[in-house]
Every structure is written in structure tokens, then in C-alpha cells.
Image (cartoon, rainbow, N blue to C red; front, side, top):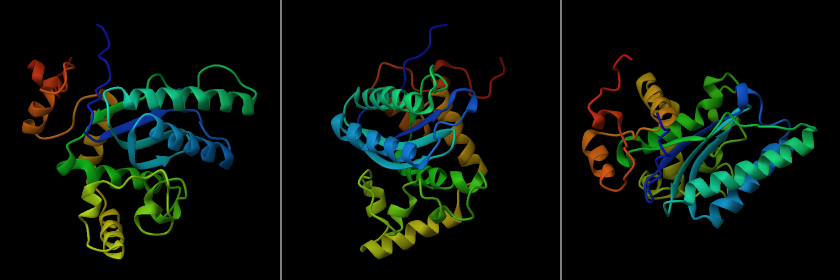
Length: 230
């Protein structure tokens, strides 16, 4: 069966996951991580992608981003991926692929899952046992949102601005969301939908999204439930 194209719809937030081949590390030094963030900044601007959140783990990364055109996200990811692989292979004296195939991504329902996805991304290092608190991890956007530093990569979403009337109020409110965490069901839904490429949201959202793209956005629209056995 032919592989479906990635789901990319301008104006909607997309959750992106990219893993290292065979779960191998994709960063070997602090300089690697910094170079990768610089590539993200350059190409997000070049291809009109708003980056709302990110985390760089040892062998994968997550992004939460809103593309402004149909091909904005694919072009950004291709440009970043290719340039970073050349840089990493040269610096490590290696050759061949670095990524585990294509990046994975999908569209999420803004009012239902956007803030939950941000929290999910910020808590990756905590779940991995790398730090006790999200604020202690330097390679994510979390510190930006709680006022510890300014991150030029980040474009806050309107839902973040709605958390409070002042910067301090927003920072406190967001920190409380992260401290509260997300449920296991929500974590699983965010991961599963992104890896499979199916839109994540309520039925009305999925139906409306389908009107905006020729690509099928949900497995259930074909009449087969998500939990059907093969």
C-alpha cells in the first residue's frame, strides 16, 4: 500500500517528532544542539513557520509549530535535516543516515490539545529521568515560557497570551500547567497520533479539517476504528 503523504495544513498547529536511526544519539555535544537550534531559527523564518515549543533529547526531538503555507513545514524540516546531517557527519567522521526515516507529524486541535502538547513536550526530560523539573533542562522552550530567558526561536501562540494579563501572570499560570502534568491517556494520544499521522481532535474538528485537505486525516473516516485489529 502506498505511503500517505504527511498531513500538513497551514494555520493549524502541528506536533513533530524526529528520531535518530535505530534510536542512536543525534547530538554529541552542546555545540551540536546549539547549531541545530540555529538551523531551526533560520529556516523557520525562511519558510514561514511559527515555532511554539521544542525539546532536544539525546536521540530525538519534538516541535510544536504552525506553518503558514502548505509546504512550509516540509521545506523547513528538509532544509534543517539535510544541513544538520552534513554537519554532524563531518564533525563525527561518519557517513550515512542519521534519521529514522521521515519525520513524523500531525495536526492537533488547538483548543483541546495545544497547551497539553506544550506541557507534554516540556516534560520529556522529566519522564526520561534527566532532570527533576522541566525548568532544569536547558534544551527546551520551557525556560522561555516561565520567564527564565528569552528564546528567539519562539513565537507564543494566542492561547499562551490568554493565560494572564501580564508576563508574570502568564509565566506563573504556565508553570502551574507543567507542574500539573498531562494524563497518560493524553500522552499516549499525542504520541500515537503523531507517529501514525492522523489528526488529533474531536470528531467535529477532524471533519472540518478534512474539508481543507485532499489527504485523509483520520483512520476512522475510512470506516475502520482506530483500535481495530489487523
